[in-house]
Amino acid sequence: MCRVITRIVIAALVVALEAGPAAAGQAPPAIGQAQPAAPAPPPGAPLTLRDALAQARANSLQFRSAQLASNLAVEDRKQARASLLPSLTGLSQFIGTQPNGTSSGIWVANDGPRIYNDWLAVHGELISPGRWAEYRSAAAAEAVARARADVAGRGLVAAVVTSYYTLVASQRKLASAQQGLREAQQFLEIAQRLEEGGEVAHSDVIKAQIQVAQRIRDGQEAELAALKSRLTLGVLVFPDYRDQFSIVDDLQTIAPLPAITDLNAAATGYSPDVRAAEASVQQETSGLGVARGAVLPVLSVDYFYGIDANQFAITNPDGNRLLGSVVQVQLTVPLWNWGAGQSKLRQASLRVQAAKADLTLAQRQLQANINTFHREAEIARDQVASLQQSLDLSTESLRLTLLRYQAGEVGVLEVVDAQTTLIQARNAYDDGLVRYRVALAALQTLTGTLLP
Image 1 (tube, rainbow, N blue to C red):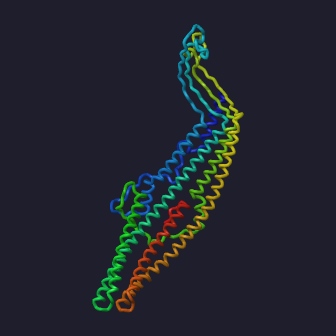
Image 2 (image 1 turned 90 degrees about the horizontal axis):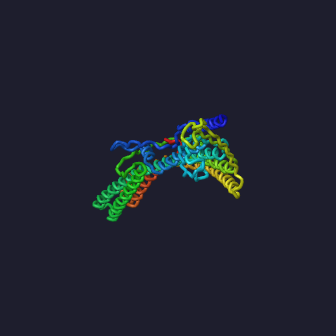
Image 3 (image 1 turned 90 degrees about the vertical axis):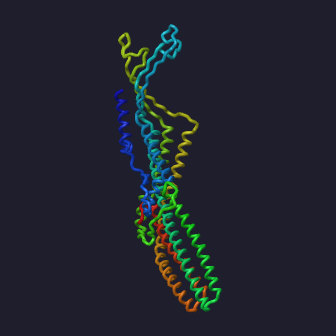
């Protein structure tokens, strides 16, 4: 009996040591763990990108759902670990049987009219391959859930960065449309003065009026686009409906682009998609062990200590001791289940093959995405300088065209074309800056590092 109890204790210590600090209730911090509710910026203070990210992590329902799934997986792993450890239960029972003059009473299964059961029972499985495989599978499932929570967190970062700088660009385009309206009104005034002096035809004034009306419509569309962008960011960031807030315009700051070798090294070790695929392989491999354990024998032991007698006492009237113990050792051997066990083994093996295929695909996709996003960021960065030059040239072209128009050297169409070119150049420059920022955010989702 002592040897059996010793083996149970040793098995419990092995499980506790294998589980490590997580088994002791000190679960490792989840990757992408939900942050406590971040304080909103003071009223009137502009919302920085980092403020927006902190607010989004605290308020995003999708991110919180992924974190909830991770926390549930942690509890599943704890329950699987507990199933490996010996269990202790207590029983207090009285069974009353109608007497009929015999020693057992009417019910033959009982050994007396009164039966008292009061004991403690310890149950442990000494050899149970399926239980150990279930624990390893639960641990792998926890790793999968943590990685998926990290994927959700990285995706949230990309969405917030894109929405944030889309709003910045929308505000810039609104300012550009307003400036274009002022330029069109200025040209209308010039055309009206020249018409009064007889230097240009009335058709020039009409064309200038058409341009003013068009710039008013452009300004309305730009205002609507800015409102939509503001609401999109507000839904991601704030827990309530909010459309009155300001943000920091730092598009002019060109953040450095890391070398592709550094990105490859960071992504190889920290890519949440690859880690999720690796954890899925471990989970399915453990599932293969679970299926294999279902066709293997299971050895269990039960130890009972207490009273099972016809009277509630430590000794009976004859002086015999009633308080004692009993040990039961049970070996369960699966013999025949119509091939269900073998079918589950083949099923688990197919799942392992599918998980390994998904892992190789995730690794290849990671390398392709890094090269694609890095190249896009390079092109966007290089185009910023060209777009800035085009903007400067368009500004100078409009100034010179207005001077030539006042001197009678060019017609109204050249002025209108120069105004349109300038507006397009301003919008293209803003779009180029946003494209570079979004490319950096896409790289961040692969490497796990928030790029500047």
